[in-house]
Amino acid sequence: MHRTLVALAALFIASLPAQAFRTPKHGAETETLAKKLGYDSTCAKVLNKGNRETDGEDKKLPQLALFKGTPAAPIDAKGRPTHLFDYPPAHFDSETFALGSRRLRHTFTLVFQQLEKGNRENALWLMGSSLHSIQDFFSHSNFIELGRKSIDLYALSDPLPSLICRPGQKPNALTSGYWPDNAPVKDKCHHKDLNKDGTEHPLHAKAFKRAIEESTRFFAKVEAEVKRRYPSGAADVIRFLKNSKAKAPDFQLAAQKANPALEKCMNAAPKPVPGSTMHSKRKKMCLQAHAR
Ligand SMILES: [Zn+2]
Image 1 (cartoon, protein in one colour):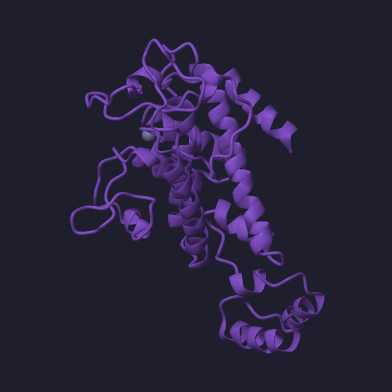
Image 2: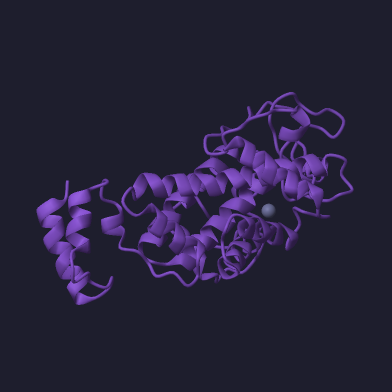
């Protein structure tokens, strides 16, 4: 699998885009990667939208409501989740590593909640938003400067408050730039001191390569989770996620352990059409008789 990731990353480096981490390039790169991984163009566009809108200031985005009560978005004075533009954990800014990881974990759970509701659009939007944060990490932190090889973005902890970062004195430990640039924070670097958002930065290409590798890993993580949750119907669930024309599978049946007796019962002639009354009657009967 690792070799596949490297090969995919190599494909990307061959056509390194300018300003890869800047909106809307951020989203466009995600859309291109998704298509290479088998998402159709409608689905890839939603991934692009989720990525792009994570840098947006629209407080009325319907997907923001999905974050209610979670650390995946900030809240306004009335306790409603609001836009993500200047929410540091959505961009791994301002050393918010622990909260950034929590946001990724929560969003991952929400992806599957939305999938099970049959809401492919929301699931893809949430994936796009996670990918935005994952990609930002490599531009906004000093991970690339430190020359580190591996990182678990879902279990990061914050640096020590005493860690010093100045433009001429970069630390030997992980940090990220404070946002906004014009709000002074003593002995810490700002976004402008560390970001590798555009090609004018000498480490932009390295950061972009790493961001694409980690994005590819994220897509693989989603598919691995589908296989874990839906052992009997993983292929159908993945088809539903990647193909805008595919109908939602029966998630309850998909979640059953591999069960030949149940499958035989469901497929016995006359085979019911998914979604029909006959299908739900058959399902009830087969689950009663054969569910493990
Ligand atoms: Zn961002």
